[in-house]
Image (tube, rainbow, N blue to C red; front, side, top):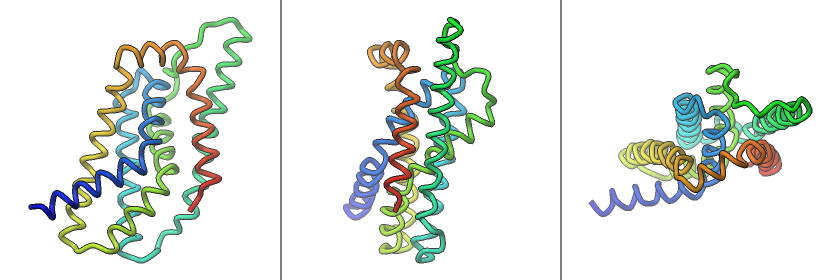
Length: 195
């Protein structure tokens, strides 16, 4: 039993350590697409499932997928941030109040969130692929379950943080100004910090 708790604890610690930036990004994405929280959550989960699958493939296959190329997906959050800045600037020029991103299709929101999470997952992939490469098959299942559990916890936690009164007031007031810069910074970080 102690061994099981140790594996779960190490997995949870590794997940938290490599995904705190994803948690902040997920809160920003919930704020960016307030009318589609389910789509944002689904996109995040899909992105993290891809991160987990790539980690398993690398851990089991010893480098079948080039992690270096994942960093190029950093272009996705940069593009989202630039588009949001453009929309913000355009609305200020016209004097119209800023509208939520409700006119963006559900499919686009899903793909944007998924690729953003995938592109920011290189550190998770490296960490978990090494972890999986050095563990037994029984332990691999435990790691996978803990990884899925932590994905659920982060999905809920990001949504809860956004709904927290003080945080939600600040996000409502300043979020549309800050979110584009968060996305751009995350994209630049991903591009500059590729494996």
